[in-house]
Length: 152
Image 1 (cartoon, rainbow, N blue to C red):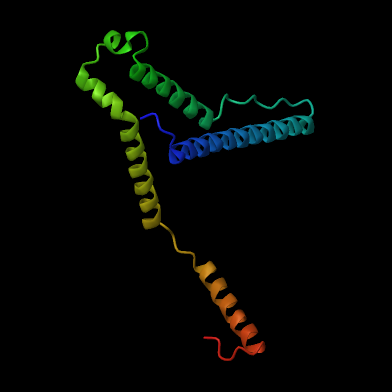
Image 2 (cartoon, rainbow, N blue to C red):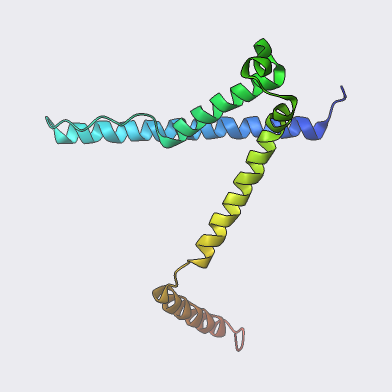
């Protein structure tokens, strides 16, 4: 439409800011891991510790998602006549067009299902219950000592 939309621009700014923060945290964790590994190697002396097994899971997932996003953008922009080269019909291109939305909804459904499953299989902790009961009783005594009457 060519108009300036403050909601759209602010959404872009927030998303890019979150990306920058996530990358900084990832780099900081990687630096901490390297420092811990170096310290462990120094403490071990001549014993060689095994080298890291490669990039972390987050880096691998982000790499795959980045590659898929690049392919999707190429298809949407028609770079190098990609839809024709891949033999995608107009119906298939409609599916490709809505693929990010479908993936987002699927991820949301998966997240809700995993949270629901975790809540259903949540284990009780009798020790924590006993400790909480003691804390409540102690708080009642303190409130009564401060003159708040019968704190029940």
